[in-house]
Length: 216
Image 1: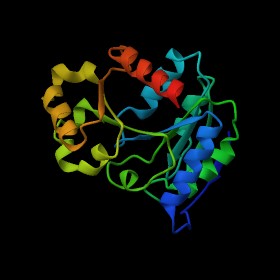
Image 2: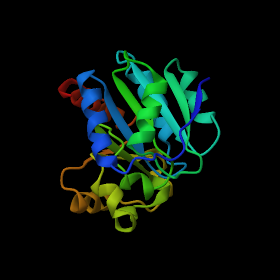
Image 3: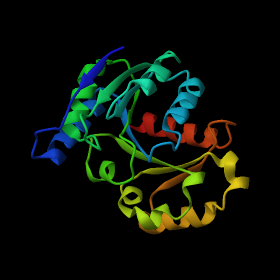
Image 4: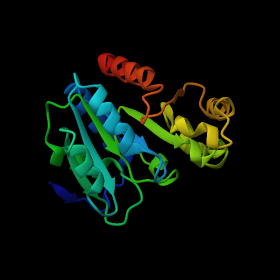
C-alpha cells in the first residue's frame, strides 16, 4: 500500500497549473474525474460498483483524506490500482496536490482516474484540480435542499449523482425538485439518480462515462 503526504500546495497560480495538468492528461488519453461529496454519501461504494461494472476499462483511484487508508484498501481489494493521499489537514485538493498524486500513482495504462476528493461540499468546489470532469454525489439521506445551501458545488459540477435511491421510501427527498434546483444553478449539469447497492440507474451513468472517455 502506497501512502503519500502532499500537504498544502505552494503554488500561487492554481488555475494555470490545473490547465497544464489537464492538457498533459488529455495528451495521454487519461480522463481524470474529480469526485466530490460530503462524508458518507457513498463515494467509495459508487467507485466500487463502477470498477466491477466497467471491467473493460482500466480504472485507477486516488483517495484523498486527512488521515487513514481505509478507502484505498477497499479499492485495491477489487483489483484496481489505488493510492491514499493524506492532505495534512487540508479540506480539499488543488492542482499541485493532484499532480503529486498522479505522479505517485504512476499508471500510464489507466484510462479513467478518479480523484476521490476530501469529503465536504464547500472547499473542493473552490479549487480546480486539473480534472477533465467534475462529478458530485448527493445522497438521498442528505436532503433535496443542498443546491440551495451549497450552490458553488452544483455550479462547478458536470454531473450530479443522486445516490442511495433505494432509501427513497424512507426519506422526504424529491428527485424532481432536487434536479430542478441543480439545473437552475447549472443548466448543463447531468443528473443521475442511482443505487450502487441495487444497480438501479447505474447503466445510464456508466454509458455517459464511457461516452465522455471516448470523446476525450
